[in-house]
Amino acid sequence: MMKQILFKGRHCKNYVLAGFLILSLIIFGIVSCELFKEDYFPAYVSQAQAVKDLTSITKAAGLSASATVGFLQFIPVPAIQKTYIVLGLHQISGPPAIVLLDSSDLSVIKAFTKLPAIGKFAMLDMNGYIATAYEDQHVIRIDPVALTLNVFDPGTNNPPYFSQTGFSLYPLPATAAYLCEMRENDIALSIYNDNWSFSILYAQGAFFDNQPASQFSLLDLYYDGTRIYMALNNRYTKKGYILRWDVLAQFTIDFISAKYIGENAQQILEVPVSKEEGACITSAGYIVQFNDDRKGLGRFALDRDNTELDRFPLPNEFRGRISFAPDGSRWLLYDEQKGTIALLRPWW
Image (cartoon, rainbow, N blue to C red; front, top):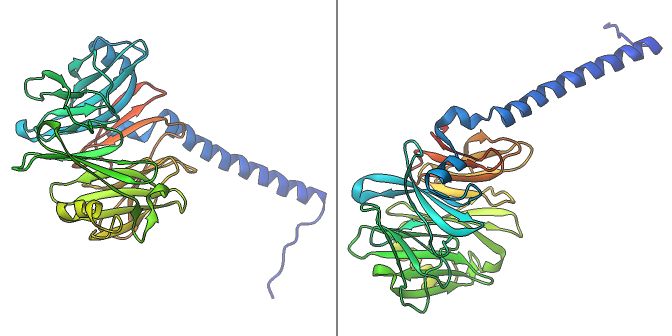
C-alpha cells in the first residue's frame, strides 16, 4: 500500500508558503524578462535591412522635424523595374509633403513639398504615375521616371478621394483606377479612366446574405494582377472575412447588379480580426495585427480556411504604422515612440 506523506504543523505551512513565493518570483522574473526583452530588444531588429530616424529623413527632405507620418508604403513601378517607398507627411506649420525613399536603404531620393492636401494612401495610377488626392482637391501626380510633379484638376463631378483603399490596372490596353471606400450606409466603388477623368460610381448596401454594409469596415483591397481580394470586419459579430474574385468583371458586377457584395465571389473566407482593425493582404497571405496579451502579427493563408501560418512578436508598447510590399518580399515598420522607420525582411 502506498504511503501518503502529509505536511502537518505551522513550520510545514511556512515552508509551503515560502516555496510558493519563490516559485511566483521565478515565474514573474521570467515573464518580466520576456516583456523587457521585447520592448527594448524587439524581434524586428533582427529582420532589419535598414533603420532610419524620421528626423534624419525630414531634415534631408528640408521639412520640419515635427512632421508626422500620414502614409508609408511600397509602390512598385513595373515600367522601370523599380520599387519606391512613398512617405506621406503632415506638417503642423506647413503644407503636406511626399518623400520618395530608396527601397534598399531608406535614403531620400526626392521630396515634393508645398502640396495641397494629400489622401490617406497613394497608388500607381492608370497612366503609371504615383498619385494621391484628397476630397474635392487637386490630383497630385509624380512621374516615377523623371521625378517631376504635376498637380491638376481632373474636372469631374466626382473628384478622386484616396480615403481608404484602391488599385489600378496598369499597364493594360484598358487602363483604369478603382477607389473603394465604406460610407455611412454602403460601400462605394469609383472607377476612373484615363488621366482621372471620371467614369462611374457604384454603391452597394449589403454583404453576403444581405447583411447591412453599415455593420462592416473595409480593411484592405488587393489586386494581384488576376484576382481581387477584399478584407472586411463585421464590427457587430467581431468576425473578419476575405472575399476573392477570380475575374475583374465578377468583382464589378457585385457592385453594379448583384443583390449583395460577395454574390459572385469565388471564395468567402472567415479570418480573425483585431479591434484596432490593423490588417492587410499580400501575396504572402493575410496579415493581422493582434493587440491581446502579447502584441504580434499573425499571417494566415488565403486559400485554406482559418489557417494561421505563423506569428511575429511586436513590442508591447508599440504604436505606429506597418506596411507590406505587395509581393510580400519586405515590410516597413514605423515606431512612433522611437521615431524610427525600419525596412525589414519577412520573418517567414
